[in-house]
Length: 173
Image (cartoon, rainbow, N blue to C red):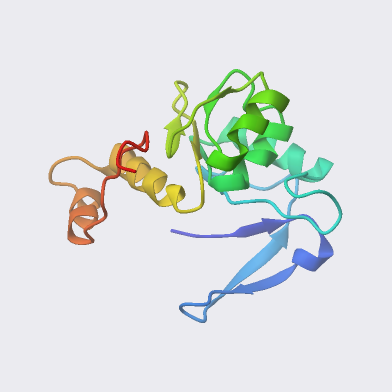
């Protein structure tokens, strides 16, 4: 498995240090020649040059290309803002942090916003989560659906790790 962080500005070039392991990940600029990504995982998008969640044109183009080529596009918490601005969520069923849902419904009516911890759209490709911690629920569901099932390594790891299954519709709170 390989992990690569993609950035679009010169300040994003260099390396990221992982707090837990102390290992460094090499980062690079986005390039039109970036190979297709199997799974795109998008976290909250913060910017030094625009309002939170507002992507650059280069980021929008990259996300559109990545979405077209990937098998799964996963947005955690505010990570849904970039594909939203790229038009990828139009006509899709999605979620967002609960405190943002009313505003999202008002400002982006072309998306079917629902109050859930996570949602897989009916197309099977777009997954969105509510808050950051709901991203853990989403990832558990994604791992189970993608690689799980009785007797699989993924299922055993989910079981051994005691990774809980929480209700996607917040019925347990």
